Image (cartoon, rainbow, N blue to C red; front, side, top):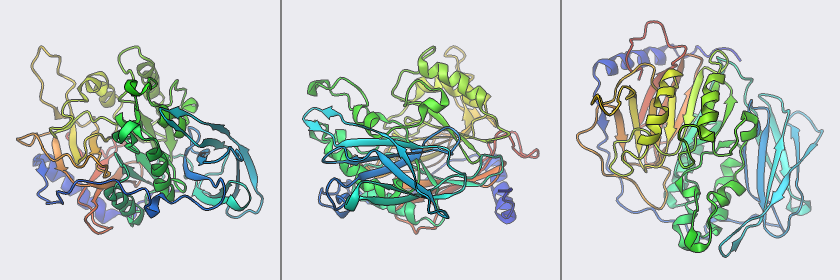
Length: 467
């Protein structure tokens, strides 16, 4: 697919507004008034948690990218009563020839809970930009779904990502997912920045809430890939319950293609999709110097070919910049470790969750600070990423509303409301990010920004924040 150059007016408006923002570098705290009610988990008999009919019918079906380059899809599902079939049958939309792929099945125990039979099956060597149907299950319990593979990897390939974090399974979670599904911008893949089910907020880390969350998200995650990031609520480290292995439920249920990016762990990995290179980091694994995550990242940034995949996106759970009181400065250690690399390799955007609110930063860095020189204020840096916190999916812990004051200069916009994001890549030079508040109409953006690519930025752009 060629470059998408049919947005001249929008681009012009974006360039003008960017220039204004560069000279009038004043952040904004939203005055929007939202409900003060605490989010509540939907009851177990809610229709969104309905078990599919038929004996041992597959449930909790979800897909993610199955390889590094986008020609593979990893299909996962659970059968509740017995292992059943490990086979995925699949075929292209314009074909009647069904092919088969064989997967694996596993189970796990957590305190007094025993999981169903969890299946993972990778389909390889698919054609780009093709709609496929796939089936899982046996006999009358067979279920059919579909997905569309991404376009061929290339610098001017347009592609649209949804961005969701800290979702949970409350009434507000359902509103967030519905709002995303009905957004006319039509996200094709979800970048999920951690904290999935919030099962650990229930007594004894009630793992049945992992099952309900899988059934709740199936309506979307079975049809488009969700790119997973592990958050603190995936740790499930509970010594008082005799559970000493971190990430046990998450790592059994949500597999990712980490081996194809030469990673040694499923908690940090990378993928290429269309014109984007996505690096997933783990905020809750060791990340200090010479740790496995550090060593992998050190090699990974060097591998990124910006002439092939110009958009460099980083996902992590804990934000490096955050002006809310809750979780304030929690990401500071990781910022000290990795911000220099983000600037050196010109990362375009970093998406995070953890803080249950929305915030967008200016393009800033604090790499000059060395504890002695006193240069502790972030400064405008044209090579730095925009940091976007989007931990506002709707979980039962509610919104984070208390903010640091005065509004810091590095924060461009902040608001404590539930919502989702859309990252819409137009071509190698421009992408459009919009944040959508649940209370608004489906086409309304409560905050938006044009992003100029850090590698292919326009020659006339001023050497300050491109937002």
